Image 1 (cartoon, rainbow, N blue to C red):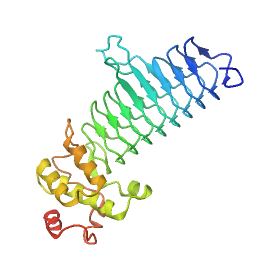
Image 2: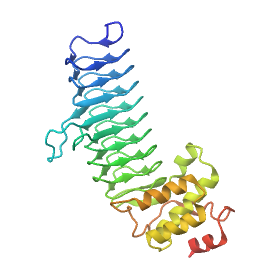
Image 3: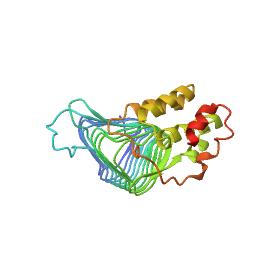
Image 4: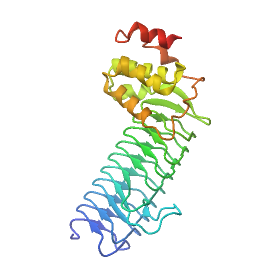
Length: 293
């Protein structure tokens, strides 16, 4: 690396062994430890601290006082070799903390094009997909998984080992103790579902048939009164040709903590839940009868 290839302020501290790519901007008082890798076109603003076996992906921006790769807060940690991987073109805003992982060879991973707003925390062994948005002051306990395109509202706390499905919208100031199914909309304390994340699906150009099928999948899972496996079998029988439905079924079946609200979502706030029911010719008469009971 030459001075022409990157712009590094004289007060930045970069330990020997750190790898700095081309066209990297490092502002005053940044600290980068020796096992860190910074890829091309990254911007690191003032007072950031990057430690551990951390890789910052191309085009990512770290805003002031971000802290990445520091020792996990898991008391079981005994100095194992662990990793942090930040994807491409992410924005990680002020005062975000992303700890290192726990257990030998494990990784905290954040996908591409994520936005992690100010004062969020990502704990050990967490995994975020692509295009995830975490709003201000959201905190993740260890081993949390957030799938692609999920949005988490501000000041939300997510329990360890919980999963948030793709395209889910979790409202602000929520407490998430169990798995949140993909494509769903909900929030609060206690957590209440509003049905399917219709606005999110429309913004991502999901076809009407897929949106209607997801509405029915939610209804069967949460409103039919069936046990979960019976509900999933009914969904598979009627709607399994749609990829998003197959993901819904797989997500629900593989839940280890259990689905949030599976005992019943009786206070639904989304009046649009029934919008497509009468107009969806793809649904069989038997399925409509089952849902309407």
